[in-house]
Length: 101
Image (cartoon, rainbow, N blue to C red):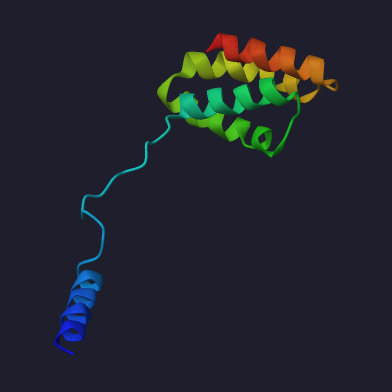
């Protein structure tokens, strides 16, 4: 019986302490440039204009705040990318925009 009490006490103590180290780990943050590059790389890989491309204009505007020259270069190709119809053309235009960065 004494053995069960000790086991129960250890279990309660273990649950109350938890298993975390208490050290907070912050997830890596992406810069606007990283976000634009990641979105364009997804388009190059897939050859499709998915939902991420809808947010590309917003990400380019966020990039403009930190690097206006790069944002202007990428923004110049956005209309061309959006008007592309075939996966081959989409990949080509997305890669061209990515190369500008």
